[in-house]
Image (cartoon, rainbow, N blue to C red; front, side, top):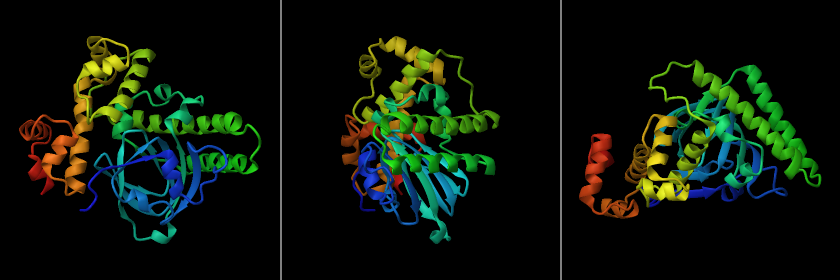
Length: 306
């Protein structure tokens, strides 16, 4: 182990690792790329947090990826959705590395905000998308994804004035809606293993989405609901009620889950002393951190590291 910190990668930085990115003249906050083995993948072999949205479509080959420390087997006709806050890394490449072939569409939060994509509507079961970032598609759906990709490539290649603000953004929006519909259909048809949250309003879901984005950004520094409530211009009591209604989990439980993933990542992939981890995660002392970690994992930090 030799990486002392988690890599934070913006879409602008990530696109530099994909030489075939087909949007160099459009926006630094968006790219579309056809990815082959080793092209753009080396930077993802270490744990990193990509601060943007990505839809990754595997055409050929296989690999094992870790997303928030859960492992997923990715092969042909697998789609992976990344949302801001996820910690990801490529764990292992399959044997057929020469045939590894992906399509990637990536956009920053700012780019998405300027499009017509309503993620609260698209992925309105936020617990499910955090727990199920990968899904399989059939041959008919594969053909649709491929058609979207090729049409976006064609529009980008033409370099028409205003293309980013008009056709491209709307086409990306349409492609993401399609991905969301396929994903949601699979989630709804799969057996449920968790308690359903009560029905909630669109406003409550939007607040919850905003809360998760803030937690993804500030969880290593702020764990009190008052901080997030102030950011959202709500009272802590009202924010807590909305989060519980939408997700079935409390606000502190969501914050703790982000902190645990961060702590596990530091313990697993770095030689950082535990005292340094305590400092980076803003715990008052090692004793508090040990109790927190063991209560959530059943192990002490030292036991987990071993």
